Amino acid sequence: MDGKLQRRVQRYGWDAAAPVYESSWGERLKPAQDTLLEIATLKPGMRVLEVACGTGLVTLRIAESVMPGGSVFATDIADEMVTETTAQATSKGLNNVEASRMGAEDLAVEDGSFDAALCALGLMYVPDPDKAISEMRRAVRQGGRVAVTVWGERRNCGWAGIFPIVDAHVQSEVCPLFFSLGAPGALSSAMTSVGLTNVEERRHAVDLEWPDEQSLLSAQIDGGAVALAAKRFSPETHREVETAFLESVSEYRRNDGSYAIPGEFVTAAGLA
Image (cartoon, rainbow, N blue to C red; front, top):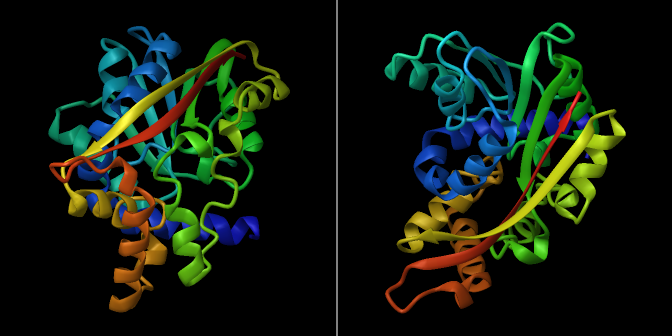
């Protein structure tokens, strides 16, 4: 897919997903976010850049970690995500958060103007992730830290069938290289290639739990990467996709109707 078209798909796709993203994914992504914040080693007084902030799940935690005296500048390609991040910060009284709509590959920030740059589960959607990592490196001062989390290998993510299932119905090609950075060593290699040093990579497995079919389907179809494609479904197609996806994860269904679906995250950090 052409990069410009893919960015457009991502922008409007995440606008569509924004209303249900946090309720669908918030708690399930917390283990990955915990590892990212641990490896980022944030301290009070730091100025932090966050790329692909989503609804602000990590943004608010960054803002609290760098108080007093620190701040976070959060960016996302989707307007609705930026709006939600700003609203969440305001509701919690965090006046050290600024959010702006901005693509990850072309950050409108000055060189070396941040102490750290973070990206939680956003690089999989970027047409040129190497360029995005390079931009994060450019944005931090010498010795500043860049920390990134992505999904791991396809074979270790039991929900991965959602992509071919949706593509078979609408040919969305929404995330053609979604798992490319999840291969062993791929993320650390990408970070090293843009000049980051002392790169550390961690890989961790999790079980993603949903209490029932409806919450699982809402997360995977309406609250995630395929949300824009799902808006094009007819009622019949929607049912077909739901049936096919539930079949793809049937082995992870418990006797009580809940689901525990395996997932894998990769987190890496390096110094500029």
